[in-house]
Amino acid sequence: MARDGVTVLLAGDTSTNAMTIAHDVVPHRFARHRCAVQTRPEQGNDVAQTHGLDLGWTKARTVAPQLRLGVGEAHAHHGEVLQGVFYRDDGRRSRALVTLPFPSRGSRAVFRAGAGESGTVTVDGEEFAKVRRAAELTLRALPGAPAGGHVEITSDVPRGLGLGSSTSDVTATIRAVADCLGAAPTAEEVARLAALAEGACDPIMIEDRVVLFAHREGTVLETLGPRLPPMIVVGCDTDPGGAVDTLEHPPARYNDWEIGAFVVLRTVLRRAITAWDVPLLGKVTTVSAQINQRFLPKPDLDFLLAVCREEGGCGVQVAHSGTVAGVIFDPSRRGTVDAVARCVRRIEDHGLPTTNVIGADLLPKGLDAGVS
Image 1: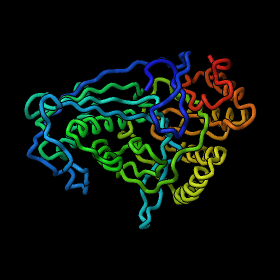
Image 2 (image 1 turned 120 degrees about the horizontal axis):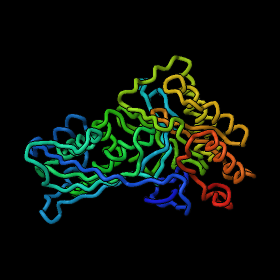
Image 3 (image 1 turned 90 degrees about the vertical axis):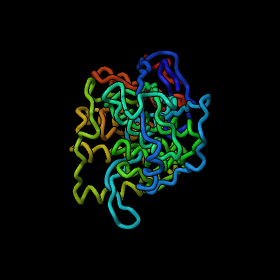
Image 4 (image 1 turned 60 degrees about the horizontal axis):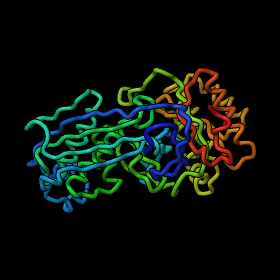
């Protein structure tokens, strides 16, 4: 992932490859954080047994002193394409979402086995309790795990904006601990552990397809397709200086009409992904944003909808548990280069900082001449 400048990515491309344009629209720094983790190896595989996880821990190796280090990485996201309550195959309802990947930002964890004070779990900073919990749960799921460890987190994901900062930290940590022990959990198994550690997580660890994801259970309701269609998203922060605590924010209580609407939106989104139809996908994101507006209002949603309409955009997507939002454009439409540049200027003139321009590399001329 890039550390300087603005990283330009293809929405839906979950690889770590991305382009970086030279000028800085949103300068940022990596923040380094450390936590020491200690747990009892005799607890063994109780986490996996209790929660029905088959993490492939039989592949875990006995860690020699010179090998007691593991590394894990995880990307962020830029809010949601769709979020609501959906029906499972058995008729039960689950809260679920479809995430917009943001692989140019993320977290990196390094786990060193054997560090820390005996019998304790310590974290440098209250905000990293979830990282501690993730390392603890992963170690407890590993038979013959080391007595403790030290996790170092490096991240460039801003907190409280709805970019998945905690899930990227937690996912990177789980991967680092597993890497240290030579284990290879699947993405679904990492998701279950992340949900246990956080109480709810985003599906950023599932990188090979688009999923409707039950974020409180850490399970996939449906695979919607291999990837999102190519699109351009002008991202911004709708509440500069504000932040949302996901766990403190009460869950949305949707009425019957809204739950019925989510049935339709799910079908339409499936069709949009299959057909690579950006305008159709934009209709889904806009309706989802409007439904969720009464639960976590975006102060300038009406302004963004007007800009989208007047500049020929396809829709507006938001972070349903954060402050970021994005105006979606179809790169195949004529005049999109100028429309995106005007959109960026109008958003910034309105006093909202732009966070990124996703998919700018899809434009014939890029944004170097139109955006500063």
